Amino acid sequence: MNRKAQAIVLFLIGGAVLRAGFTGLYLRYVKAGLRPLLLAAGVVLIAAAVATIWYERPRRAHTDPYAEERDGGHAHREPRVSWLLVLPLFALILVAPPALGSYTAMHTGTALQRPWGFPALPAGDPLPLNVADYAGRAVYDHGRSLEHRRIEVTGFVALDGHGAPYLVRMALNCCAADAQPVKIGLTGRIPPVLQPDTWLQVIGTYTRKRITDPVGGGAIPYLEVSSSRPVPAPRDPYDESWNG
Image (cartoon, rainbow, N blue to C red):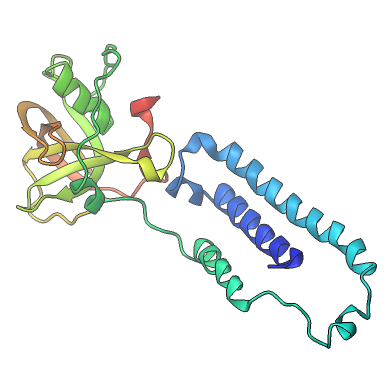
């Protein structure tokens, strides 16, 4: 592609990056803390596009106007197929991909990691905990800090091949490419009909029941559900708390 076409592509990419950063679409791709770097990258790309066009003007102004005539009237043009490079860009601008969900969760082993410690839990009934915090305490603290407490946990629903339900959050380290699931099995008063990828808020109590994840062999703890209700998907679908 010639310099002008390159500048147009750079400008479109920079605009798409800025749009993603300002609208929250970036949360489908990277963790929230990377937003300043994403916005800076968008500004740099647009500045590079403008500079390319600006510096191209003098060069074209001094180009020999008879060069094409001396070349037999044939201009050397870049193949049009190179413009196909723009198609993924328009897909990024026009189509917002869904966050990783139940399919990825059930085909990836649980990413539960041993926490650095188990700080005292605050008062509250029910006590809100994220999926990774509940799972970490249930597995590695053997539920000692969870006993005799009602716990409130929110995540999306995933079903295994036998229809058994799990509550899942995708743990994010840097970007969606390295997202891994943390899973909690559900038992007790489970709704009779559950759809995969439905976001669910459950209230329940700790149970010693756990299973081994058939994918990867990690431990999956269970929560004894006493009540549940569907909730809207959060603005940030990924959980970054597991790695700080």
